[in-house]
Amino acid sequence: MLEPPAPPGTAAPDIARVTFRRIQRHMSPGLALSGKFAGQGAVETDASGCEVRLSDGRTALDFGSYAVTLLGHRHPAVVAAVRRQLDVMPTSTRTLANPVAALAAEQVTAYLGGHLGGALNRVYFGLNGADAVEAAVKLARLATGRRVVVAVEGGYHGKSLGALGLTHHDRFRDGLGDLLGGVTHIAPDDPEAVARVTAETDVAAIVFEPVQGENGVRPLETGVLRRWIADARRAGAFVISDEIQCGLRRCGDPSVALAAGLEVDAVLLGKPLGGGVVPISALVCSDALYEPLLKDPFRHTATFGGHPLGMAAVPVSLAEVEAAAGHGAELARLMGEGLRTLRANRSGLVTDVRGRGLLWGIDFAGPELAGEIQMGLARRGLLVSPCLSRPETLRLLPPLVAGPPEIARAMATLDETLEEAGAAWGGPA
Image (cartoon, rainbow, N blue to C red):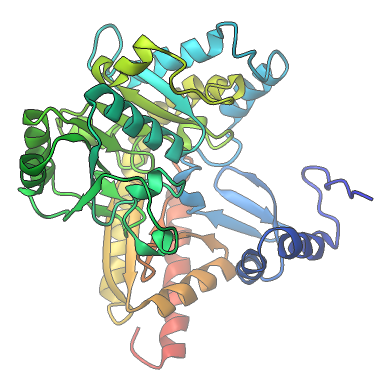
């Protein structure tokens, strides 16, 4: 007999045991084991703002969630907008025009400066970041009639089979044989790389993350990007900035590329676009890149692309992110100061810190130490995200709804955990 889930806000005494058993039997034993370690035998049950509540009554500060919760958990304005839509029309006929999707499209293009004839005036909505990546590559190939796509070493663009062709790390690619054909990876510090590739073959597009999140929070040099873009444009290739993790003011600006004055044909958004409530991604692009869909809007579609629940969240999420932008700049300053102090005081364990805005990476002396630190932070009530492509690095992604007390709490938790790790490893912290 099927067991109903516990009501929201409640936790049966055996909910953790039942949850781990179900994950082990029907999902992955590895997921069950890692979740059990991280929660010390407890599971997440509810969340609000910066905090997640566990089944044993403890709370944890969420500076992780892979950049989704920029507005925190259950932001009241976003939840209210989604709930209103849920009570009216949660899904679309996909035959009739939907005003909620139309408004979301207008708002997201206006947000990136594309309203009323601007450069980025078209939108394709997906659910996950890989949806936006694959749509962008597909349109670039159709619009140019070319096959080759240039991506960057260290880049991460998703794990679906098409997007994985652009993702660089072998961990995600091994054992799969041929992926998306025609992808060439270039070194992130080679300004002449695009010129060489375009001299050898016709290129449809270049795709890059201006800040590589999964690769340890590594910004690409603006000068290198500027040269790549100039060379791509001379060769008639499209330029696509993947900002699914670093955009929407996660790194301080609505778009990292546009703020740097880079002339791109598309910006990819996702993760916090749904306000941390619903999954949404977007390809925001020029008419030229969107041309195949102007000719035939059914050339690339998805059943739940532009679904009304997600579309209802978009305008509110954008407005709330903008309202908190000034506060976010102050949080970024506090994060930078705190982490640089931590590195200076714990140089035996911390080898580097890098970051921009509310996206920070901490390099540790090795992958094993980084894993131990992540588990130690979780035990003390601080959740962070690992970097699967660079296991010696942990990511800190504080939400805009955090305040100075939460930043101070996170820094204190980091320091305590490093103190314990230093003693356990038998060397200076």
